[in-house]
Image (tube, rainbow, N blue to C red; front, top):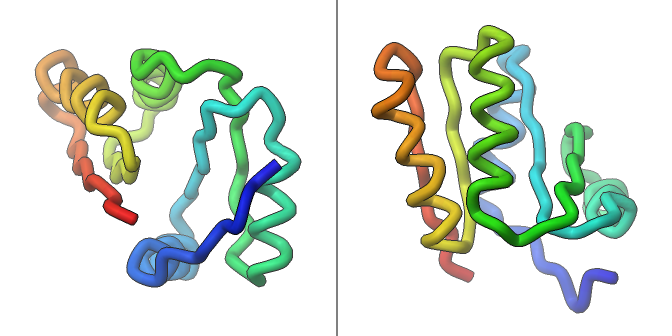
Length: 109
């Protein structure tokens, strides 16, 4: 269950721009169930995105998911997270995939 979720306007603006440009956007959550996040997206009338519930808070889980997408051909990644540990884990992919543009942004809320 999400407790008092709030829209972060600057990230939603970027999400809308990404989707309107025809690019894909995925929301990764450490939760074991994507339903609460999906409900928030619908209730807030946000652009529809794929929500992936990883079921773990291990920072390397998000990095591993992103790496799998890179291996599928994604060459630009813009990653937003409120955890510095998750940001650092994703930044490590820059060394392994120097030809992929990986942007990380910390969300302070």
